[in-house]
Length: 268
Image (cartoon, rainbow, N blue to C red; front, side):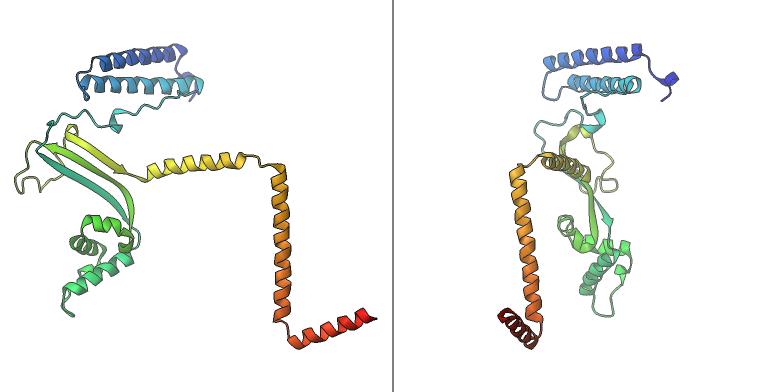
């Protein structure tokens, strides 16, 4: 960013004051909340998050510094629950993503299912295409079984999510089948569970940091020297073992003649 585009010190100061004001409003909303999912607290939370984000950006642009706070935005959390306290019906919404990593394996599995369904020579050969193979496998196996055996079917797991939503009553048969995912009310989501590789990446970063810390630890010099001596002894033993193996592999007669020559030389 050029100097002309940088925010002024006054703008950064104003953003900091906005964070303080939003923080006071959030605390006041929490102190006055009427229940666990008070909309006023939710709104104050979003205002605080937005003010903190603006301040963080201006602080970085002006001074190349960041805040130590990480406040999730409104899009990262569910809105307050407004459904029935004791729902008489629920809907379970599941999405699982897969990559077709091994199409040949997928086709082979579908062809086995297809061959078992039809007599020889009567098979419809639907399993000859990837989309046809997917239709066969997902028609034959339950989604949970495919999830647990995805590698057998040539699939690679991606992100997945499960939402449990509350309803006042169970829907009539066939009511939502044409558009099953279009009328989800986020405020009626009782709970959700997400699985993503990004969570694994966060854990890997933590493990890498721990490994670096362990590597930085200085060992006792005596222990290091002792380990070096043990390593040298092991190497010498390996050399001796190799020489012994070479002698055993040699011709026995040659070995016997060599021993006699060494004995004669010793006598002299």
